[in-house]
Image 1 (cartoon, rainbow, N blue to C red):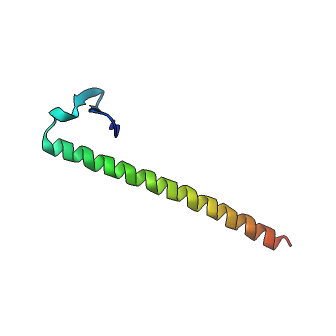
Image 2 (cartoon, rainbow, N blue to C red; image 1 turned 180 degrees about the vertical axis):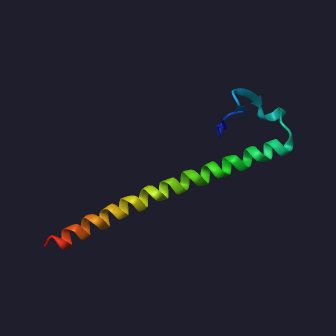
Image 3 (cartoon, rainbow, N blue to C red; image 1 turned 180 degrees about the horizontal axis):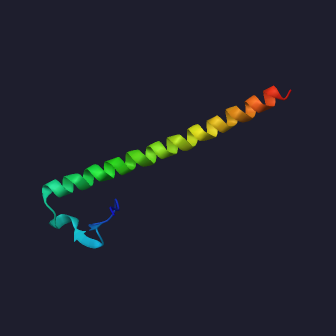
Length: 66
């Protein structure tokens, strides 16, 4: 697991000091962090879109039932 604030990384229940890893491994960690941030952003956008969809559906329901 990668924590954005952590100085360690856990892989297969084993903890590693990030500073002791190769530059390639550190680069992979940066990439994973970026991807995790993008996933979180997209999940927030999905939540917004679901809220909008529900609002449109409620509005449509109200319009149809007039």
